[in-house]
Each structure stands twice: as structure tokens, then as C-alpha cells.
Image 1: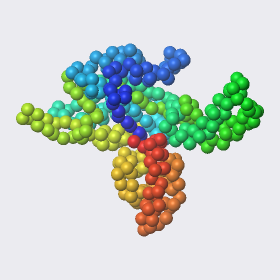
Image 2: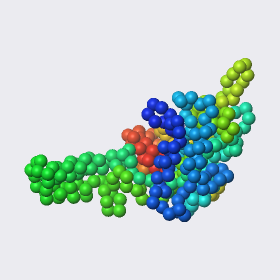
Image 3: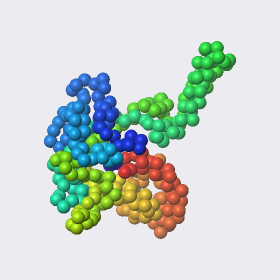
Image 4: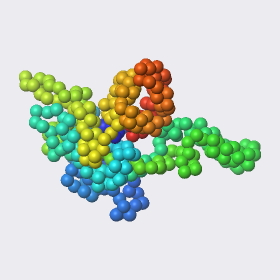
Length: 341
């Protein structure tokens, strides 16, 4: 499970309206029949229009400054294995989203407990993803794409009489470069905008910065986890515990759908990898044999060669030293796969 929380920002300024973000989320409905469209939903409602989402989010910003976020975006990305457990069902994704938002509310540290009924949010399921310029496969295909584009530009110049050259030879070079590109999908070179294959369902959630009453600020972007401060001589609870939110979101999924995740699929493991990679790999080596085998299989999906880890545990330090050299590769894999958060 890969979950992100971001404040919607346009350059140096925060978005003053949810309109552009809602329009972005509506893109997948273009060209679809009404019964095939995915609508917004929330804790108790279905088939909510984008127009209503914009109205409710934009009118729930009392006393917020232009320099403060008006709303946050949560993205919930189940892994391919988790989607299989869900059978990629929209209804099950909605069910999980509603439970996740309970975890979200419970992660706020306040004098009065925050419940999901205090949270103004709207969610929408998307079933496809397209390749972006930041994807590893696009980056590694880019040198070939650049040469192909240059050759196509030269061909157009030759056709306009602006330069001389052999168009047939250039077309042969283009064909060769296209085939030599390292990453292909269904026989075609992977390019920006191409839909990704396989199960890609995920959930976008728009959450108002203010609570349902439009009186209190509930910011998941708080730099405080769960602490107390003194305001006007009185102790005041504050903060949002992201660690608790991410961990509980995993537990919620496992409890709802009977899943049992491997160590490398947990938020705890991912955080350990970032802060203490030695401990991360040592923990993998200390797993029971069957769980370690599953961990290796999952890590292989990130593009990391784990064969070198299959050595006696008493030699783990040798493994750790060698694996440090692979940290950059694994980190990229974690960011782009279901294992990351």
C-alpha cells in the first residue's frame, strides 16, 4: 500500500480553488458512457458531481489565508497483489476508503476526539495510469526518443527542401532506434502518455483543511505528530500522527480482506529502509525461511538482484556492505512500485 498526503500547490502559491484538481480527476471519464463513469463519493454518499465537490471544498475555507492550504490530496495506491485480493472491485475500494478515512480522523491529536464525521472529503477511483516523464522506463528510453525526434525533424526539413539527406536511410535508423529502446510494452516502445498495463486502480481523495463545521483547522501537514502546547495559559493538544495513519491503514486493509503482508510490504519496513538500511536488510535476513523467500520475490519486482543475499546469516555484514551499493536502485524501485510509501 502506497499512500501520499500533499497540499495542493501551484508554484509558490496554494490553490485557492479545487476546480483545477477536480477537472484533472474527471479526465478518465472522458468519452465514457454514463454507466461506465466513476463519480465522487464520501463517507455516506455516492454519485457526487464534480461541481458539488468544488462548491463544498471552496466554501469551507473560513479564516484561511492565501498562504495556507485550502485542501489536501490523499492518494491511496494498493499494490497489484492487494488489488487481486480486492478483485479490483470499485465497491471494495470504496469500502476500504471509508475505513481509511476513519483512520485518518483518528490520527489527529485534539482535546475532543476527531471522528470521520468531522472530516469533509470527497474521493474518486481511477482505474488507469499513464507513463510520465519521471518514470524510470521513460527516462531510460529518452535518449532513443530524442534521437528519433531529431531524425523526424530532419526528414521534415528535407521534405521542405531546407536540407539534404537520404530519407529512406533515416527511416531505417528510426526503426532501429525504436527497437533498441530498452523498455517496451505489448511490442511498442514505452513513451509518455502510454497507459500502463496491469491493474492500476487507485483512489484520489480531496480533504478540506477545515472540519465539517468550517470552524476548526485539521491539517495533516502539521509538523507536530502528537504533542501539547500552551495557548492563553491552557494546554492544547495538536498534531497529526502520520506514522499511526500509515500503519493503521495497512492493518485496516489486512483486517477487511484477510491479508497478511510480508515485512517488506509494511510501512515500518519502508521507514526503516530510509533511515537505517543496514537494519532493514538484517531484518529481512532474520525472517523465517518462507517469509524471506517472499521478501526476495517482492524485492526482485523492484529490479534488485537479491541472489547475493542467499548466504548464511552469520555473513550478513558482507551482504549489507554489498547491498549499500544498490541502495539507489532499490530506492527508485520502492518509489515506483507497490512497496513504496
